[in-house]
Amino acid sequence: MKSRIKKMLMVGLFTAFMGQVNFYPFRTDFRITVGVVMFTFLLLYFHSVPIVATSIITGISVLLMRVGIDVFANAISVDAAFYKHIPALLYYISYGIIIDRAGFRSLFEKPIYFIVALTTADIMSNFLELIVRNQSNIKSFDEIFSTIMLTAMIRSSLVLALFWIIKYYSLFITKEEHQKRYKELLLLTAKLKSEVFFLKKSMQDIEGAMVKSYSIYNTLKESDPISKEELEGLMADSLNLSIDIHEIKKDYNRIVISMEKLMPASDLYKTMKMSEIFETINDIFTRYLEVINKDVSLSFEIGTEFKTSEYFIIISILNNMIQNSIEACYRSDSYVKVMCFMQANIVVFNIEDNGKGIKEKDSELIFEPGFTTKFNPETGQISTGLGLTHIKMLLEYLNGNVSLDNNTEGITRFRLELPIDIIICEGDD
Image 1: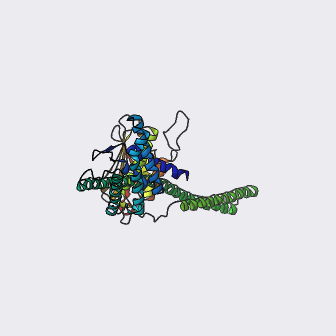
Image 2: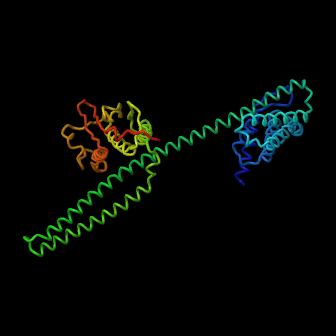
Image 3: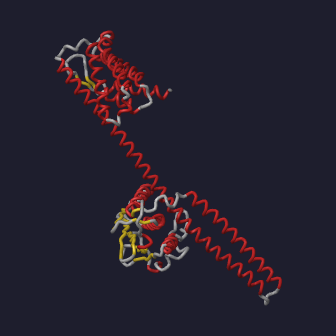
């Protein structure tokens, strides 16, 4: 209730202020103002406020403001000022009653009916004001009617245009926000998909270790050279190891199932265009660069547009590669360029930067698990050295490969190759 009253008072106050933008078409006290446009627009915008009650409050607000201006600025007596501006109060009350009866809020999606309803209400209310002011015979009827009708049509059209502009702007902002959230969700899902892949791989590795461990147990069980006590100890340790690995595998399996339930259905979006993938990654890293306050020029180029169903893995791979490139950049003219093109029967991604580069002696080791040159001198924290290893594993999962081109001085370029028959597909977005 308080909120509604507050909105009604806001409508009255804003309309009274905008009513000071006016002109006198007949050189009398009758004026035409922009306040009616503001009044009607706010009635549409605050769609929950009652129209008739708000028009009464608005009429009173307009009356009080005009009386106050005349009394304090023009030295007119209070009685004379009230007598002069009472017709304006009647105009807003009449206008509110007519548009309320016409149900104008339900007509804004029907422009012609909307303009007719507001124009009719404006004309009728203006004539009422002229009659009350006893000024309906100051000009010929044709001149009065044409002026009032033209004004009414202009004001009605302005209301409709203003409301549609605000509405479409709000829809545009909402759409942008949804797009932003979708892209963030897409990146998160890509990361989760990548982690699920590694969890599944770890489960397979654990399964293999469990089999080997149990094989050792059986071998030891059948061996004679060692003492019985040593044999029993080794057998017990091997069996316990096998049991522990099996428990770890079950825990991993539970994690995988839980993560897959959290992710969107795999067939929600069957394919995604390469341009959309680049747009998503570009938006995310543009905001990331703003957060870390780093000046790096990021650009994307596509040789040929195509759709892929493996967009989650591609996003995960490119995300890691670009992150590494950005971390390597330190110059004022730093850049990271991502290119995608087709060559024979493969899709090629080139990720190029002019960062600190990779030493020749390290180029053979960068894909090895645990190898890293990243060290934070402030925290003493060393990178895990698994980023490029994960990238290589994800590429191999798609029957692809990665290589380092370190031949151009000052430029580091990674080349990712993926088979067309696995990456490119036709289907719905």
